[in-house]
Length: 448
Image (cartoon, rainbow, N blue to C red; front, side):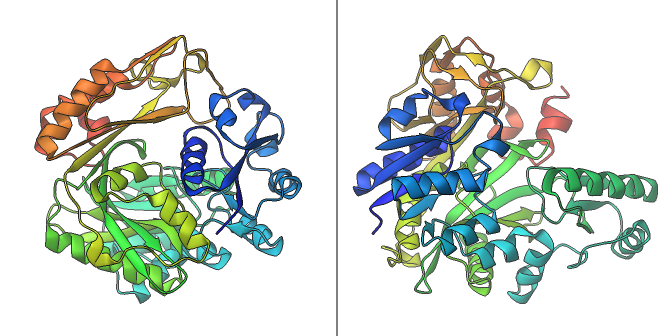
């Protein structure tokens, strides 16, 4: 087992990994930028090291600075969290060549699954359902038009190296496709330094359902149920829940088996997520693999009673998974609301600044994952998420009621947050019925 882990991240996920390390008796080192100096969670780490100025390119994305911090603190592993360098194959290679364990999949698996085009190829080999389209990158507008004519509109152009909704354009006709193709390539090149794109059939009003995977280095791969992430704005998730309102035991097994086959085909180890789109008839199609721990992993932890960060660290250390597939049982219902420092009434404008008061809800089945406290100043440099409010209850009806209660108790003053929007969602008839889809927030709820 590791003796000391460096956490190459910040905020909520850094605190989550610190807590796991402390429970496992592992010392931890937290890196921080000047923008995060004095952040409350740093005091819980055994050591902390400043790695540069606020811009992430000069701190949390600077591999040389992070590796220097790892060397001077003599760690034997690095946990990348999510975002930043968590899916960077080169970073994993540098860790490997330095004799430091990267708590994530191998560089080869990251390269294979991190590119959506090659990931589609792996899915095809594993027999996982794919939307009509091509497994190769599309190099020209003419080729994109030819594909669209063969599979039918609407289609979607996607960045092969993309994520977070960047480098994606939906087209319902040829003119929109030409414009979308050029825009997607340009956006992908700027965001990912790779302008490769591909084209596939676009599903109207699908659900976004993902399978949580955990795999060790001994050939054991287990899926810990699913999460429904259909409530999104501009492809950014707002609410996640488990189990999915549309799930049946038969569909869960089919999707879980498909995700497991894909992971084994790619030689995947530690935690990861296989994401699918599900149509109104219950047909599911592979979308992508996130080769890291997800923001929404606590949802799966609550319904399966599994500590995924602990399992991720154990797997990276070469330990066998302490459970098998038959041990995993989905019980009860969990909901997560991502609380962002944004103003929903003004086009979700980011609201950095000083938090003057925090009151955290409690009571049975309530969990608050956050690094903030009164007096904390939210930097303008990073993602606006400041916390995750989770509830767990015996069934979905009770979970919704519990989340409503928790949201009315949550008080974060000094900045605007998305809490009022989440309360509106919890009271929305379509959400209560479980009949939402990936474009529901933008095209229906916010359009009212």
